[in-house]
Length: 267
Image (cartoon, rainbow, N blue to C red; front, top):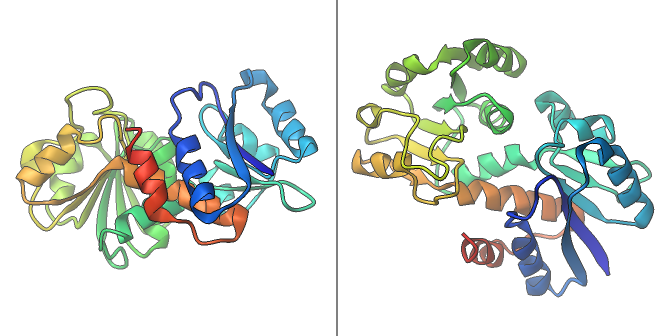
């Protein structure tokens, strides 16, 4: 039996176990997905221990995504983003990957969003924002990064390259006038009835994705629908980052419908 899992602190809230185990059940794979919660100073020991015990793969969540970068051989994308959320132990050396970027891209493209040549606005330049910015830019879109601290947005834009620009939050309404895609990568709206974007800045012809998935139907998404925009809820990015990890670990096409049903049953 193969063992996969999630390492973070805390991890009790995670929706990953039922999503991955639904995939194993659907494809008849003899595997389990478990959670590990080491103390923050012990992450290096935890990764080394997982390797020694024959763990097949680990997802990584807060607060360890940056720490793990130095404990594995990161692929070029994870190195550019500066964070690892998936470890593969199948080779001689553990390798690190960032499936958050692919998860964001696939969440959008699965809803018919053509990113190549699109104008995107990204609100938030933290951990999720970094992965999403690279995903959007690498798919051929321009990305205007708006953040409360403009210096953080500027640092991310410099890392992403010529396709990115940095702005303060007050610039968002103006940026949205000609935008095709809006992504919220902040925690605004998580557990609260609030939006990071003024409702009157939203418009038809825009696709709005919110990385927040608790609640699933955020104020931002409701405002977007009222304005005639298309919406993509946060569970889609969560789903597809799991799909990418599953496919990397197993070499098999993920049963997306089964994973999606298991995930949404827990939200």
